[in-house]
Image 1 (cartoon, rainbow, N blue to C red):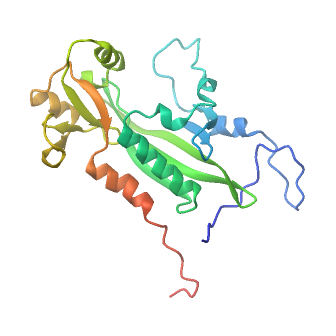
Image 2 (spheres, rainbow, N blue to C red):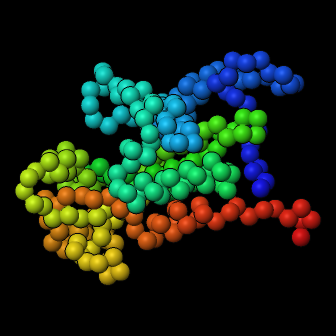
Image 3 (cartoon, rainbow, N blue to C red):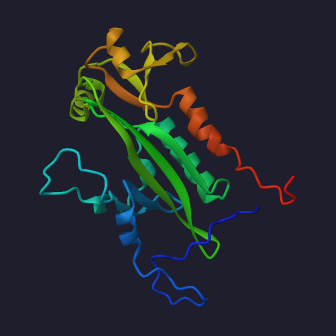
Length: 240
């Protein structure tokens, strides 16, 4: 199979260059830190090799005098950090598509809302290759827009965590991790449910103490995963 891997020098290597070109004069960590938004490099098995929030993504919450230590995730498996079995499987599928050369890159828009903010973002996965061999997949996530709104309990992480620890039975609601829409009615079978905006969930009587389960709606599966499974069209060498 024609992998069509990009020509990328090993930017973290200290080995001398044997060709006419020279290696980039900085380490991989420095390059990650300069990338807009959040960037991390992941190996074939999903282990995070390097991680940087980047200089252009403001910290949200916490003490600004004590910035978040991004090195804590290095060495962990990316897929173990993804909530929801369907969502985890979708990221594995995207990762394999890029690592295998089926797709050199995958990009999609998604949402990562806060209680009082609708946040639209873009994620890209790109192959890092050296000598024609895959070395890592670069994940990059940037903020496209942030729109204030009335605070919604569905995105209050502290509240959701406390509800999840409660021994009292709570209603369960499925939230699509890509578009942040909610499955409705809550107890409907998969074929009978619709996906509605988070605000509409409460307008229709959704309980404020619902426990969130992360899933994947049919539209996002086709838009994100389905498109990644389709090979990149090959150029016609004859130009026809």
